[in-house]
Length: 535
Image 1 (cartoon, one colour):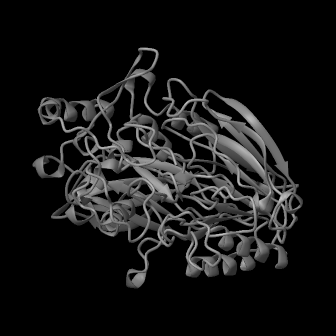
Image 2 (image 1 turned 135 degrees about the vertical axis):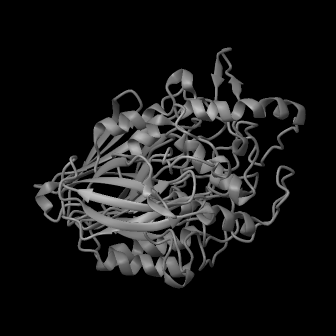
């Protein structure tokens, strides 16, 4: 997995302490953030002592289906969230949805579930924040729009995917227009965006400037929370707020709903449950403590339908059903995995998904009636992702023979898909900071009891670019296309950012995958036919 800008070593490198320099910088940090938001009232809630509630961080929607969706907002002080929806921008005949009270317990964020929406329609929404003590005292409404999923096959579906945002020290650079790929994606007007993990880099320090190898200067917007690795709940929250400083992100969120999953950098690089850190940057060494704080911030800042289930059973993995053509199976390859290791054990029931999640995935795949079943993975299958000199971070470990370690669980899943004759599956992921297409086939594999399938990789969306990873031959991958830099951690000034597009035709059912580079270029395109086992 790509590592912080402080060095290419798989082990995290300590950041030299510079208290005097940071003391000088802190006076300019709030000014940098305010500039990024165009002066839109970024005073912390504790200092917002007058006026009306404001929603300077924009709006978001998530997990949209044919009849429902989630709407998100953040206030600058305690407020009641009220949502109105309408078929028109004029909000004639608007429907009112009473939302939660926003307070310090959720960092003044809140999510409202919208239900009973019409299928396949453009929905306009307006969020008003009201003073909880005086409902007549309201802030200026903020607006957004999204399309609900179709209930007819012939309408088709088109979405984008990518991941890896604000990583390796490459933050919001006003000199290049900020996170420009978001503006390009917004102009493509997709039905939704699949964020494939590493939505933040909680372990990635953002310095005011970085000197590139050719002498150019990359300049970052900075904030106090991004001046060190995140450990406290407020520091994790600040990492999510950082991305929302970018005007491209806020404009994108107001028009395109998202399906979001998480990977490692939402907590820290290459983490796994039970890990105890040997990293001088952290005073809190117990990763389970860090992960709990990160998960809370993730739930506060991301509209995910399964994070607040009754009885405290919140989880990231879920199915988002997007009409008769598409089900998106959002996997969590982080929360249930076993420790990173040489990954060559002959018996492994935990793997990367955990036994319970694997059983859930089998049930949901078998029950799905959608033409296409996207397996949204936060890590690739056959790409070798090391963690240090001897351990491995993903599924593959470089041994091209029979499945070992975490590969055993993937072999079980692939065998299940074949024997249950589950059609229309394909895998989408990010994580490795380049874009590629791999085709997996049993005739090339050491393990052969599976149907052929495709895996497509995209990203980063706003982070450093890295060379291509080696392939592991266990499941017979062939790299049909790859675009990756030759040098590690190329800045977005030196290497384009990447995202993918999936376009499902409503008449034929054909699914077209396009791997795109920032700047409007389609690098690779592949058409897949419906009705095939695996793919």
